[in-house]
Length: 396
Image (cartoon, helix red, strand yellow):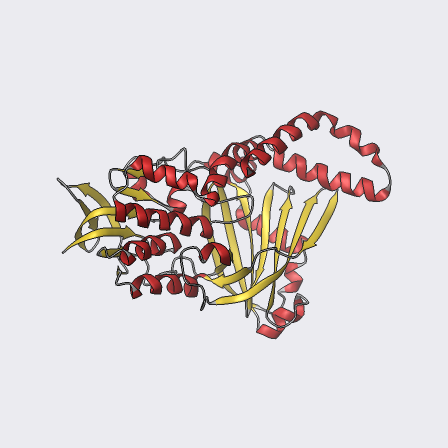
């Protein structure tokens, strides 16, 4: 059987592409390596509902908790600074297994077909269509959407992107601790179904970003560390996670709970527009082209937006030029593309650690009424102004 579109991957980006194409009346087949959508991303994440609602019906969204407070903490050898704020937009935590199945169901309701437990091994171009070679046989389709995720082997084989390198990747690891609903609320001083999220930036013992999310009956904690730092300093990722949990009282917070999940993944710090997003009827989306916004820790929103654009691209047979142009026209994706230069500079030259140290020191000096510490950072001011201007440029 020949399909109009073959989507490889049933994550948020793949489901968005499948939904848009099937809504337009195309015959869509989606291939998924796992036994069901979301099974490769078992635990959860925090999502912005307004972004999901641009593509999917969110009226029955399987949310765990609505995040009412976000706590930002900066930590350095000089001390810690923390700020709490309420989000301006609706944020919720979701279980990826439930969330991904919820998204896929909407594509399936529009007659998209899913084949799980199937791995795509290669793509061959025929005269006017493509042949996708899988571990269960061959499938023919007119157009392809690559929603493989970060380990995008087909995209590499097709020359759309290079292999990942330590200089441009972050190693993320996460643990999920099970508690009952009342204990989660009690231990984090939450009322009813309210949720809380932490964002932590630290430079000790290496620069890293930490997080904590609350779900109905569990707490998820994790860290993301530049891969190059781990290699150069010969530190294992779990050592940083252990340090994070001890320093911020998480070890005590989850005492008596059971460890439900331990997972790890690579996050690319490079990608579109440096990586190609399209090639002769093949459109890459989401993590396949590194669409993660490091500033706001957001990968699912941009993945869904890019998937919806690819869904329209296959429906209307867009050229690659048109597809790339439409990606750029999306606010969520344009922001990621414009952040690439500052992201590379902050990670590659160690500025993240310098600024973390400087901000905590200056705030503590200000609170103490002694601003003499300011002078030691005078040499950093030109680079700081440059980075602020780069950051401002990425926002407008």
